[in-house]
Image (cartoon, rainbow, N blue to C red; front, side):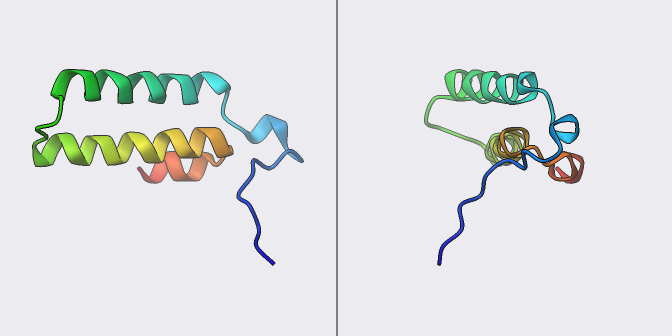
Length: 68
């Protein structure tokens, strides 16, 4: 049996606001728009961190954002 990763709806107060996901998404878009296809190592690492932050915000796991 496969389990999907879904937000924990049992504790809605513990989840970050949707604004956190929107902010991370906008930062990802801005980075991609600014860099095009030629990425430096720093830009690639920044992109990875932003993806982690976005994923954490959409799943409601504030510990992942703190670790990033």
